[in-house]
Amino acid sequence: MANQQLFLGIDCGTQGTKALILDALSGQVLGQGAAAHSMISGANGRREQDTQQWLDAFAQATHQALAAAGVDGQAILGIGVSGQQHGLVLLDDRGEVLRPAKLWCDTETTPENDRLLAHLGGENGSLERLGVVIAPGYTVSKLLWTLEQHPQVFERIASVLLPHDFLNYWLTGRHCSEYGDASGTGYFNVRTRQWDVQLLQHIDPSGRLQAALPELIEAHQPVGRILPAIAAHLGINPDAVVSSGGGDNMMGAIGTGNIQPGVITMSLGSSGTVYAYAAEPAVSPQPSVATFCSSSGGWLPLICTMNLTNATGAIRELLELDIDTFNTLVTQAPIGAEGVCMLPFLNGERVPALPHATGSLLGLTTTNLTRANLCRAVVEGTTFGLRYGLDLLRANGLQAQSIRLIGGGSKSPVWRQIVADIMDTTVICTEQSEAAALGAAIQAAWCHSGSQAGLAELCERCVKLDPASETRPIAAHVAASQQAYEVYRQHVATL
Image 1 (cartoon, one colour):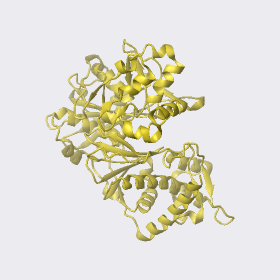
Image 2: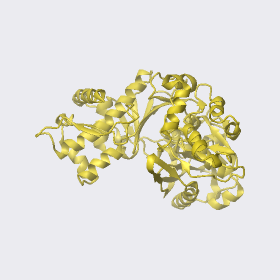
Image 3: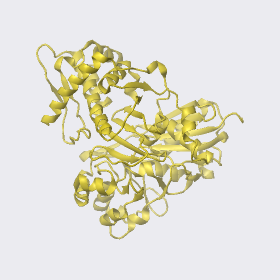
Image 4: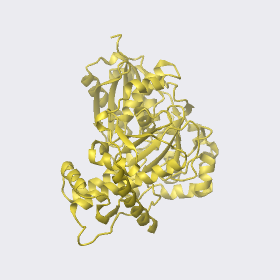
């Protein structure tokens, strides 16, 4: 059909893979699919995945999305892949995967990261040299860990890839990486947009890692065409173009239309993220702000909190509440939860920077210890962490008229109002909650068009805001929320 231009967007996350079919002419999402992944968890914070699961889920989700859209896969013009950031996939010289992928949420390499950070001259040295502060989740410490723990695997490394790079390699047979996802490796300079080869030489003077680096490409450049055998396996047009793709946050930025200054995207998932587009690499002096590159040609200063719906879910399960009852109880408690304050650091915390912190409930009295106050306190506590991060971004010159809200928590009108009041900013949801998969499909359309300029027009057409979700701050709430936030800040200061 000449009046459609169909693109496949894939988001390979920790929990599973999502697929979506976008018609770039009408801007409509025609069908979606999903398939789950499982995690390999071990002592010391090991979090790994079998990469074959990603490939199986990719095919399953794609077949589902094509069926749901009722379209012929032969009409697909391009594919874009969003992937979980920071993960490590190692290939040998035959292109075979050497061991399970170590993920962003793996903390087993914390000692290696500490040593690498010391080598860089601490947080300030890392910021000065790379433009980011390397954290245990980043890829670089996983390489040192592999060298020390699995020397026989290390000796066979021929290619070092991120999860989305690996999927692009599977699709096209080409090893390459784009600036956005590369920013989270810890061996990439976000200012110059080049690999920091010296850092890899420090880990392994033999030059093996340097030789294993993928080629860097620009966001608007396609990786290439899909391999005929993979096209047949997926039921896709063998002439389909595979776009550069990117990390989930970078693709989420495109999928929320966050490709020019003035928009903030906030994701309320198991972890929370806040990010905004910047045209220049203005690196924040705050170690918590990651000035990643965007996958749209600019930069994407970002903060990430480790505790969000995991904390609200924990309280919900503790009190044996369904989502609706939980939300009702939140509304029954006043702002500030009558002095009950929860520091929801169940996973330690990145923002505020308290990696070894644990969760705590403070300010309890005989009268305020109610279910409603506990429910309110966990929602406020997690949202205060995002406010803390937003303030760091604002201190670095970020301005925004509105916040675009995505992720599971954004579906709650109660939580939307709390976000609007605590941030003192209007919030609105995008119609398509799978922002990363949508962003990947939009980027595929951009790469297919061959025009560097067309991204804004594509976002204008394909990213739809949901007017019914628009939530404005209420002046009286803003003042009360500010007071409760001050209490939270005082409690955090004692840690």
